[in-house]
View 1 (tube, rainbow, N blue to C red):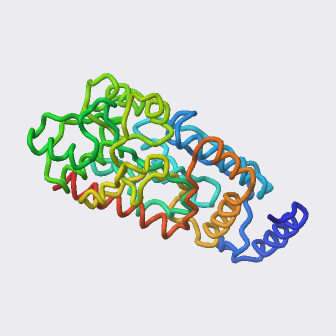
View 2 (spheres, rainbow, N blue to C red):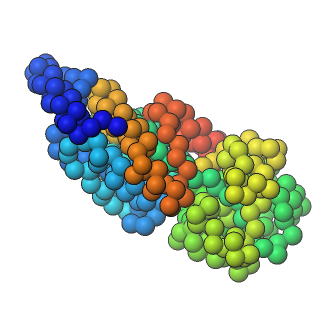
Length: 321
């Protein structure tokens, strides 16, 4: 990590270089923020997106001279915040936490005023949450294959809960249904926690959740993990196979990264990536991630874009097909 004096000296030189740019507003390679950075979160405080935003904000604040502020703009499964950032001035000072329902799922179910790929430049993938498939602890299903076999035997009679219509959690089952050729009944709830409670009470057959959401119920013997939608098994539940190894090409994760408006100049995006990439290597972030159970991803913009596109394409095919 650069010392504060060295960092400020570097930024002063960069600022001088920026002033020498073209009058039309050419941004120099050494862009420096000129006002507070805002990280917009499309969900209420305390959720996964908010937790990641506040953790990376604390770590990155050590590396920049301007304040970094987390702003919650909840509503419409993250759509309101996405619309705000898509229309923001593309000067590098406004970022959006992306990679979840607002980026991969919602636009395929209803009309929104932005395009997740066209209207944003993805800066960095910060963290990823595996999506664990869960059933009641006394359920007869112990693998995704057993669940699918029963769904095939009784079309439309097995049920799954989700955190809401058009959510990424719903889309896991929509894509699985398309790939496996089965039909299950969707029961939407107002969030992930009510869906978990519904499985535990036997109201619905199954759901998916992130490990932090379901940990207490799994450890308490209330729910049983039977699979994961990631590309690899989740270390805490090694006996739960991936949907891919179970026979269906289904990759879904709840990603958490940072994006900016699409017209943000590439040199600005490069500086933002460098700042947040270095933030993820700080003791501040590492200690925070360990305490709250975050899996650090640290992928650059192009790699982050590929992951979003892979999920988005699969959901689009399943919903429209």
